[in-house]
Length: 142
Image (cartoon, rainbow, N blue to C red; front, side, top):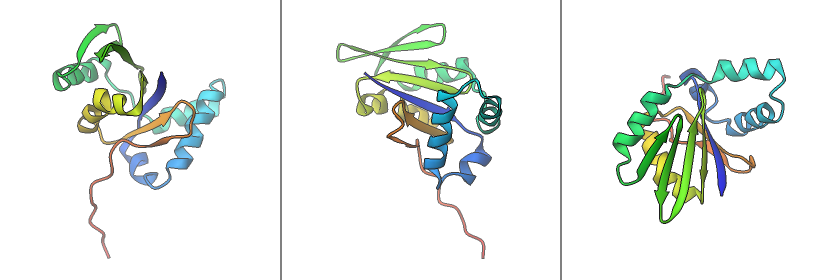
């Protein structure tokens, strides 16, 4: 099983740090490794935003109909090819446990891309990370 974290960032942070994913990855790794540090906790709360578990679970259940789900408080279980893949909704991030990135993509990430474009994904190991979807083409002012 592989574990991924999906963080819901403020749009200001998303646009300011879109081309600096390695910096965000280092920050989130530090946050998870040293959660008792108040300065990291304050920064984490500043750059991320609270999400509604009920709204997210409702959206996923409506838009990911190809997968069965069972809602148990804040955890949704997906049954795909005799394997149980789960994601847990926290107040500012998701924790996804699945067989592979391909399963996570078809299970959840495709649906999340339509739900919110300011999502940063990080593998638990920290080796793989990046944005869920690219920023739409912006008009450059000269």
